[in-house]
Image (cartoon, rainbow, N blue to C red; front, side, top):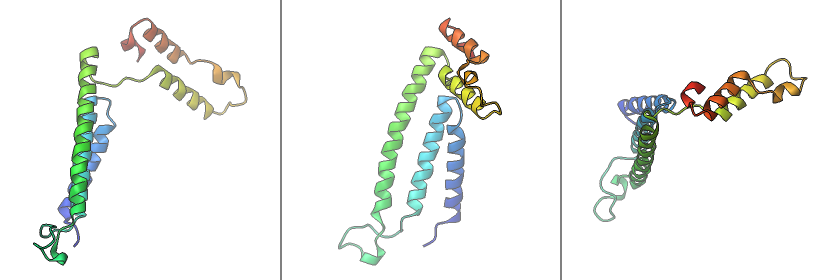
Length: 154
């Protein structure tokens, strides 16, 4: 049995939209991305199963039984998606409560590591002292965070 083309297209759209939303900075959009990815995975698992009668020995002939494994996997995936949804909702609520928004901000240390990695890819690698020097933008961001003004760190 080959899967229906509509199911395959819906799975593709759910996965594409879910991945796109996961790459956003807002926790609400990340949450929606997780939910869409979970639903896409559930539909993908269900399209892999075989349709038929109930898988109970004695009520249905062996060749006409449906495959119970995809159904069990979907039930497990639903529970995992529910747990992830609850966790991300708690994170978004806590972020909204503390900061007034649910956007994930850059970490100062991550910025410093990214700038050091960008320098390593540059043409002048012979001087080891330039790798240890701290960039001006990162130093300003660290000072802003130390002063208690993280909004100015961007």
